[in-house]
Amino acid sequence: MMNTYLESLIKQFNYYKMLGEKAMDQVPEEKLSWQYNENSNSIAIIVNHLVGNMLSRFTDFLTADGEKPWRNRDTEFEESLSGRTELMAHWHKGWQCLLTTVEQLTADQLQAIVYIRNDGHTVIEALNRQLAHYAYHIGQIVYIAKMVRDNDWQSLSIPRHKSSNYNTRKFAQEKGKRHFTDDL
Image 1 (cartoon, one colour):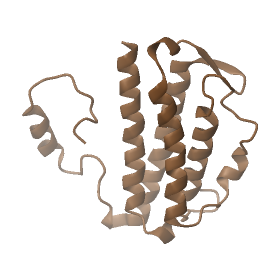
Image 2: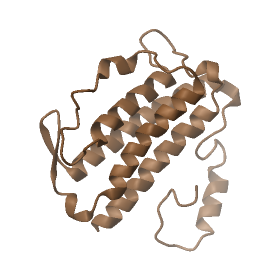
Image 3: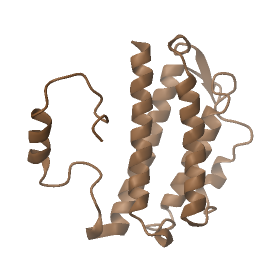
Image 4: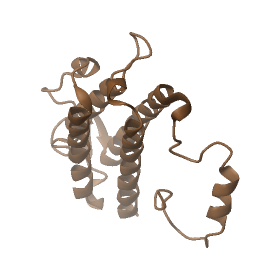
């Protein structure tokens, strides 16, 4: 059961990584730093925050508090990445740290206690917390990308008015156990 949880979790993390990448691929480089207003975050700022969080949470995941003393969360919300190449290198660094750590976990470790700002969580709770946090911010990246692309946006899910086509394809398949990301 717990190995199934880990397999599903890894697929979910990879799914959100893919969504973020596909959204950012549609955004012209000069618009990666676009902000709706001064109180909003750009895609580049959100990426910087996500990576800072991933590096802090997943470095020495089982043995050190998830909020590392070297992390400066406030600076994550300042423009610091210049251009798509730097942004994507930073993005991959965060995801590599996360995925390498999660892929090395075993079912026996899932009930261990880890800390985030001195609050104890089982490993499962900490992983679920991070999955929800990253999904929240990936949704923001997708929404910003949609605003930037406007009518040129290419849907990352079932496009409008295509639900019937999608359902026809899905229900034509034989029933079976599979993860929803398997056919992406």
